[in-house]
Length: 87
Image (tube, rainbow, N blue to C red):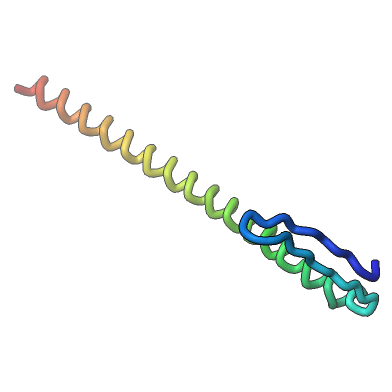
């Protein structure tokens, strides 16, 4: 594409026209505009995987804490029952 013009309606003032000029050299593989457009998407996808991994670790830690809390409460109940029986 050599040239793309986009009319943008404005709420304040007259409409604006945006011109995008195409350049075949910018589209060559190994850099240029394709890399500029692709790289942020790849970084975002990598970040999503990292966040998913962190979420999974946090869920495991939460589950372990809940298990420890349940065990602590169970132990307190046992101690309370033993105390009541010995009294």
